[in-house]
Image 1 (cartoon, rainbow, N blue to C red):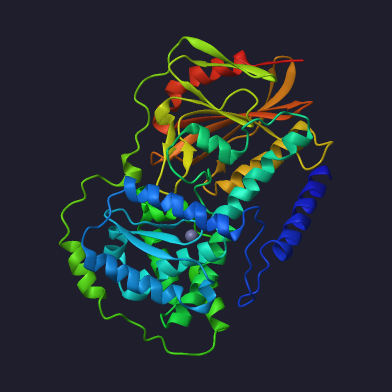
Image 2 (cartoon, rainbow, N blue to C red):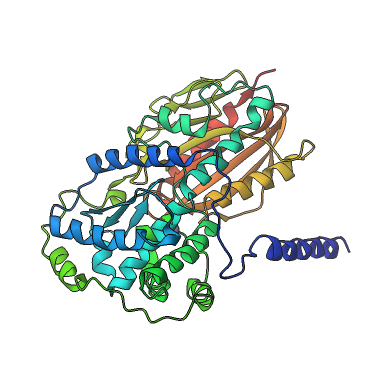
Length: 450
Ligand code: ZN
């Protein structure tokens, strides 16, 4: 009986969600979501980030190619659906299949994407999809939600210090202008960018179906070496059908746009000398140095935790988030962000409800983590554990590693008067066994104050 009731509750919840959460009718307008940044701040963030990226990444030196991507991009950006942003289009010399947008307009495309596209409409499709992320302000929308997550800390009487996620990324000192820690768009952001991207394409005279077709093709070829594009732009599921339904709502037209330069541009890319540096993301390597057996303490006014003395603590006492990791454990990437690929992250989560149990608050936190990280998969049942006399939960999951492949994650949660204390231990799968002993020692070292 009990089981039956639980299942029924799940079904009811799922139904509510189907109508309320997924429910955007094809063709209905899409508006940018919650945002604490102004449009001007989007543009400023993007401008700073783009300058930094242009210094760090190798740009294609063939000006004819740069001119080509600019012409194509501006043609798409000039349609009404693209909104009014100072768009720029820059070709990066990199064989990886990738493209990304910064808030406020700068869009970067890898030369590898030009090679992979079968026709100009597919290339235009990727550009239109990126333009849509800018117009819908997905970058700062995600950063706004992340900041909101930290905000209740101040209400709870905990001193935040330099504690916002954005400030943390700055403290980590990546030297990148964009202080946005988020790397991947959510699935709902992806389906929005597909829908608005389709509209932009159609308005510019390109067949919008080609965008979905290209993404599905990348997905099919994916396998273990999935294109980088898919790790930052997760598949919201059945793109071809969703985009098809969107197109049904557009006025009928034949799609004939072309610069007439696509084949020539592909030839020029084929003739480029090899890039001086290998693919940006592929270059990131998991730390080679083993964690030291000697530990030192990280002390906060709320807790103490030990970590290997050849690691660093990023973020000081009273920060909303502390990262304990070797330098190479923090991976910078071209999106102007950082992710932790190896090490531990310590923070507090503040539940929506003041009376949430440890189990409920942990479930809520897991859902937040999943939203930010669609590749996340729960790999086992949570188990109970005692941490410094307080009841805690250990939950295991896996997700995509910034070094490529899969990483193992272990989440510790402990309910404390000041909020839900949590630690995420992060190990690339090939190194998981080696890090296990270190994580166990760190777990046992945790003490709470007061
Ligand atoms: Zn996307």
